Image (cartoon, rainbow, N blue to C red; front, side):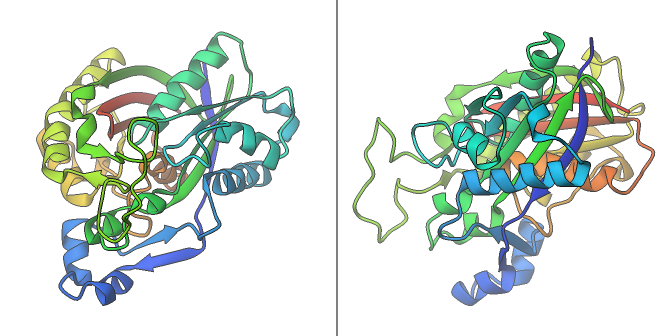
Length: 324
């Protein structure tokens, strides 16, 4: 039995943060510099009272509306988020109710970041192939903006908020191929929100960029990526009995354009086979791959083999090939 990506939709919050908005707060950080370093012109930002469950629900509603899906047919919901509404209950339970899914629908969260879409697809495939579920909806929903300090110009420039919803079933557009997955928790400290959970309570000092907010060691993340991703791609190609020549399109996690171009050159992927699609969204964490994939297949291009790869926070990484 096989599992397929059947449909994808996504939702973007209505608030936008442009490079000009950021430059007005940080005059030394002009719009051209942001474009050159990161490759982003604007990003969508969740409202003050708009949370991951809200944008997740909007993504599911868009999926069902765009593709005429009966919500009663959805029997498993996976919500991938690192910005949950609460410690407990799971955001997936809240989304099940908000989206009007059946009470016969299972609902779980996975706390996964930039590799989350790949990890979620691996779980969804297992559920379908094992006949535990027939129609799995994988939601990626992040409001990372709420993790970022107002004076952190670097992370403000990089990250945007978004949610996607993907239907995985026993038939559909793209067959889900073989996965390569990996983890190295030694890198956990390099992309982290240290305070607020059980180990470290949240600080009451909110005036400075402190451990209540997202910390990212950019050089260390780059070093990890430059070492892990080429091996990931080689292993994934081998598992799927493919080569860079036989793959029609490569869609990586849209971290930033500098990193993406570096990886493309290092792995020797032709420019016309390598998608960069983040200028209008920023790095939307687990939603970057489904947004880019949705936009790509929406152009009706004849691409039969697409390699998807995610990597980042954790450290964690994963990739697979999907077949039309």
